[in-house]
Image (cartoon, rainbow, N blue to C red; front, side, top):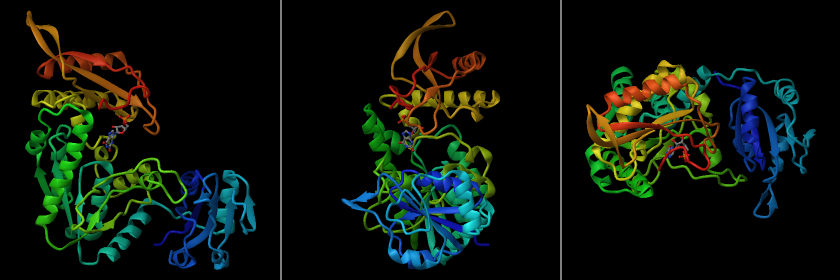
Length: 430
Ligand code: XMP
């Protein structure tokens, strides 16, 4: 089953993803491509039904206006242009047309069918992965995050035992997180999974390191080294699977867009370890990635989990990491997540976690003075993580969480709630 396709050519619009989203919301598959794509490349797409030339404020490249190749007008494919003065299309608009005009173009002019859904997408990708990989092997760093988990499930569906997953436990995972990766992927999906417990190695490298940037660098660098060591032990691997998703590509800069930020997945591997990339999710938005995961049979918790930073609990155990405080972060985080789930807040709040600073305060336990750590609770809502507001958590829930943390987590005598929006505070503390 091939899905009908509407191609959006990026001629400097800042609205490419908005348009792509809107067309997909009509049930028609849509992809964004660079303005200088050739007619040959376009002809190679199955079921291309129409082309939308999407101009806009970033249309100048190296001082020259971006233009499509004139040969594209000869394709005989329905075309429409938005904010593109050089357009030779029959239908031209100065600004983003409203939904009805877009709908009319997609369904009437292009005759596209609303046949884009996850089942078809998975069938399509499965076929493409098999064609790309043949009988070769693919290596995948499986962190347990949404994107890498969905890629793993997709690759297992497509090539089964030709996929080798490596899960590196850096010792900064949440409670039972690594166990759940092993359970789901090795026991239930029967993946070829290599589990590396590198906790001691990471904690050793991090000993005494208090500077947040230094901590992040050590965790990221060490991760690549552990993964590289595992890759070298394996033979006959030609491909590297990656959980790149659409926003990663867009944010890393298209030909016209200004660079927002560079994304690093398992980049940084040494030159002599050369792999071809397999990126089956690179056309999906985050919510589509989740829907894909559900369709592939991954557990709800894994697919709908909140964002979790690469350096894990390492940036929530503030200052130089110690085992007792790391344990306090992990246990308090587990309690917070359990109580939020009971109160239904897990479906409402965008991100919530606990933090343990590296100082102590005075308290009393069993009529004796104690000098112990504190746990800070943070719960925020955001759309894009660039700004964030604090969730007004129900007082009873906060009391319950506090009570449990004080009773169940060792070395802790105080619990606080972080009231700071972003900015000026960031979401994470380090
Ligand atoms: P900040 O702290 O910058 O966080 O307000 C914004 C969002 O990004 C997450 N975050 C990370 N995610 N790798 C990631 O994949 C990282 O190194 C990282 N640092 C922060 C953070 O949890 C929040 O959702």
